[in-house]
Image 1 (cartoon, rainbow, N blue to C red):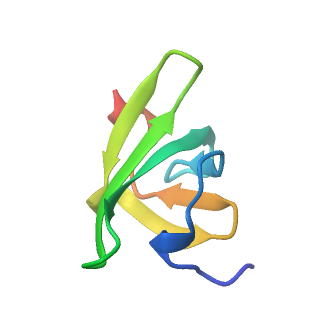
Image 2 (cartoon, helix red, strand yellow):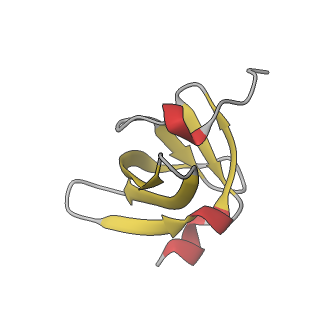
Length: 77
């Protein structure tokens, strides 16, 4: 298993998986205030035309190249 990393390192294109481990999309945007270390959440590209905002409360472990959510993909709708 890869060591966890800070939300500061998340980059667009990283894989996003739901609570069950299924790939739901990729990171499109990271929202937060780096100066105050406040992580607001992510915009996840589920497809080319479909993007969803995921609040930080629904973001679980972050490892290099991968963000795990604490919710199921169905809860993103």
